[in-house]
Length: 417
Ligand code: AMP
Image (cartoon, rainbow, N blue to C red; front, top):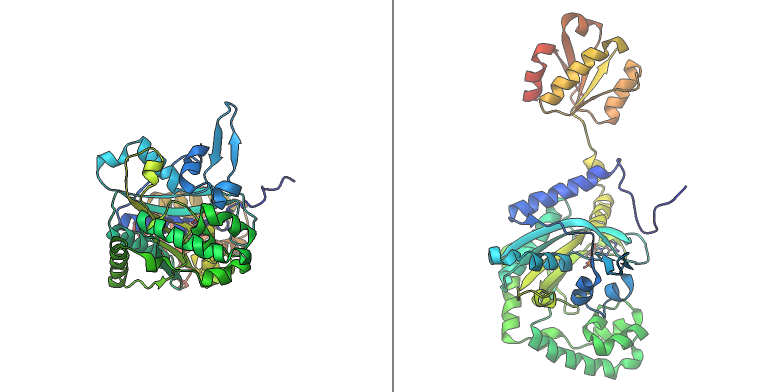
């Protein structure tokens, strides 16, 4: 037997409805916010990710599925969504059609990570990008959208952590302060952090290594280095979140893994997830368009991990409630009534209901069991009497009531049920 590749998972017929539930919610919520979908290819030129995510990041350093195609070009399976969206927006001049682009995506992404619960090598993300506005109201809109999605799928017990990285001036100043501090504590840091310290000191704050945690705990905070513009930007975001009733925790050491962020960064966490507790996150990225050869376009976005959303729904026991159902299960007492059953099934489908009948020629009793297995709302019963009188008996499976309908009137019944 050939097994699926390590770190990948099949989405099977018995739980694809949970995925569809989430996908439908993503569509509903993005429609409420007037975001349109973008679908980019699964692979891109490697440059797209190298130039945007940053050479010093784990993603680019260790986790990308990069290969040469037969023409000798270096290609990479997309490890995240934003870089590809920006590449597509630049290439198709999407911003010249208007000054703002609100877009979302849903799809699979690839990272060569050590698989564990909630961490895969092929995983799925839902993400949104608000492209073209430098203003804090765009940051607030993106966070409101992400929050709305979580609530709409039934996840209310999450933590929103938020921080600001300030603008370039702030980051430059803070970088120096941080490097000086890290130098003083160099010997206490992990090897990884000692290496990162010079090239990308902010990433040290992201470290999960126990040796680093103590040093990070006492490190100077970027919030103390903010200039007036950055402070105002952050405060406006927070005021807007307050007015929308969204709770957050200001987390000074939240810097997020990717290099391209500035100003607002945020992350959603859930205790239901265990050690991989991040549900999703995002932030503002003002320099990314230029890094990918476009005109400047200040933007903000987020991505959520769909597998992790499902893990939470599972932990909250909500997956059971999402059991898929069929409207009508047609049950016939004798195979000689198959044609009549087929006619009834067709009428119901024509009227817009979902309707199935047994394909195994099972006994009457077993067909009822099947109807329950499919979670049918109605059993449409065809026996000798129904055939004789050109009728069907319709049993409401939840209320256990039944009505007898002329087959002539079945379409009419279906459109009212
Ligand atoms: P990132 O693009 O790293 O900011 O990740 C955004 C979200 O995607 C995370 O919070 C996770 O929910 C999800 N995610 C990232 N990497 C993985 C992975 N390897 N497996 C499953 N989910 C992931």
